[in-house]
View 1 (tube, protein in one colour):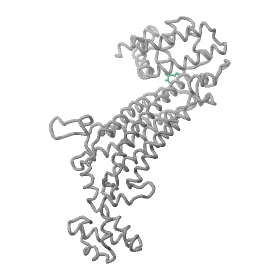
View 2: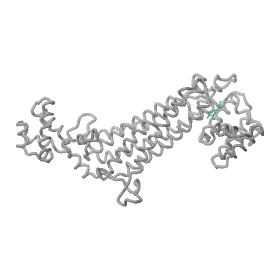
View 3: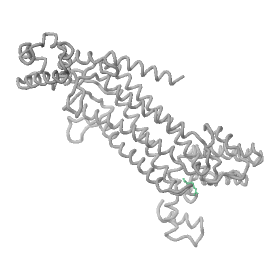
Length: 471
Ligand code: ARG
């Protein structure tokens, strides 16, 4: 809306006396309808539950209740059809819905707000919205986990270098690597489940802040809206935004996980690594360099993580200075949550898409898995096992073998038995067998280890846990 429009709107509401510039600015800073219209479905559900309760408690007549419920349905239909006349001068979704209800059904509309305030109304609407957002995000993450499990299963024995400091460290399997993300996303889902459980209490009936003198039934409205129980304290009911903060912090941590995986995709798809490739479906070309195939979706996931972290900081900062109970600052709780929910939806879907899309270049990964003396630990372990050497000494022996191979410009497995025995006379032909990448990963059978048998078992357990959830 332009400045002139808003001036017109202000003057329409308050008359000539308020038609100046400040009124237009006041309207602009005060109005939330441009973003809180996204709460329309929750607002109408909340009003329906409140109306039915008022009627059941005989606070409004059955005829008035029927008119209100019918009118709310019509308002809902108008919004969904895109014909609803949203008006900025009515500030927010709550007043827009109520004003339109009055236009549609007349006087009974004025009875709906009995024993209610916009403070408990908005707290209720927003909780319902965040609850839906949690459910949506949960479903998205479950799909991502399924994608990771499928690819992990396919590559339970595909070897790649495992890294620390981004230096080749020890061979792992690609399946094992993907399963690490299954664990991380599993914790993200757990955080959402926890947050949902704490969120699921009804603020409705807290009224402005002190409760109400009307004989309301908070259990009834809580039940009607799918809440487990009413919130216990009316001041807390209208001033708490922990549910939004928990959603944002769970989102931020999850976004960090997605960003790390995105970063790995960026590295793995580079010409220097070539561990995986993404198809045309998940890459873009360069307008100048025809050879390029850029992993834009991964880069954007990495970038958008910053927004989600910002959304969390933003709301934490809004809340930190607020005395109880409601302050208008809290109107600014919505945009960070909407942005985070939208961003997460996009990032999770794009990540699931890339995981399903990617092609693993097994030969490249296998070659890299053995490069950089990644089986040095295996020869040290062999010296401990076969020769009863203390690990510290075995580490030294392996280090000398690496040095020798490095000097000769060959891999550890290319050293002759004589070369090796010159370093440690106890070394036998058997020791050389542990130097292959395949035997290295196969030997890592400890709980949580990278051996393909372990990876397959971990996948089966993860699938069983998912199936258990469905019960
Ligand atoms: N639009 C407001 C918000 O989102 C609704 C609550 C208004 N309450 C008030 N006391 N002004 O926070």
